[in-house]
Amino acid sequence: MTADHLLVVTPTLGDSEFLDASIQAVRNLSLHTTHVISCPAGKIAAMRERFPHCVVVPDAGREGAIYGALNVALEQAPKDWGWFTYINDDDELTPGFAQMAREHFARANAEPVTYGDVRLITDDGTPVSRITTEKTPRYFAPLLRQGISPLNQQGMLFRADVVRELKGFDLRYRLCADLDFWLRAHAAGHAFRHYPLEVGKFRIRAGQLSGNVALTICEQQDIVNRVLPGSSSTLALRWARLRYRVLNLPRYLERRRHAGWSTSNALLSGGIEKKA
Image (cartoon, rainbow, N blue to C red; front, top):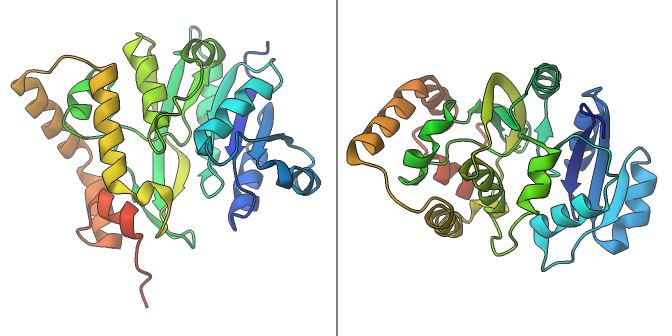
């Protein structure tokens, strides 16, 4: 196993108009990378021809959805990688991700999970704002217990031994298995490290899966109750929420300039109307 060998997985149905940009963004990282595309069996030949530098594997079928595709890719990928991340076929990893990876791989006793900042973009690539983020892991639990998701999956890095320990993504969740994945790592005591770098871009579009806000909230609550049993004190809950709001104030204001007073859930469910 090579410590700086990165496994990137992209689950796709093969028809995203943004797929080429997502794949090229990974190639532009100039890291020691194996990029695996997990797609329907009928699209394998076309994907291999279109992206000859990638490893292409069949997904888990319609019922497996995104997380089933990720599990298949983890099973079938070459085994010499040291770190793992995944990126959807309409999102992108950025040069900041490459910087984070190089810095993290060079650290002595590097934390087994790391993450950075993610920028919201519209369907045409227009920047909106950085997504609000909690940089201190001890506040994850009190935030999640209030329905506040403290980080985003895009650009997260997981060390190979942690990925093996987690045994894949839980397919009972259609939208939030990524939350379940990293939260199980956190609950198991694995250290997280935040880098103040823009590591990914998350594209918000009307009709996307994450726009099903009701299901997202339901799954998130179930995951938190199952993985983080117990409770936080009233003081801990209030302090975690207050500091989160204050520290992320510049991001709220940036979002306000581009999208008005829309909440993050409203943006996910309806996208952003293009200005004339």
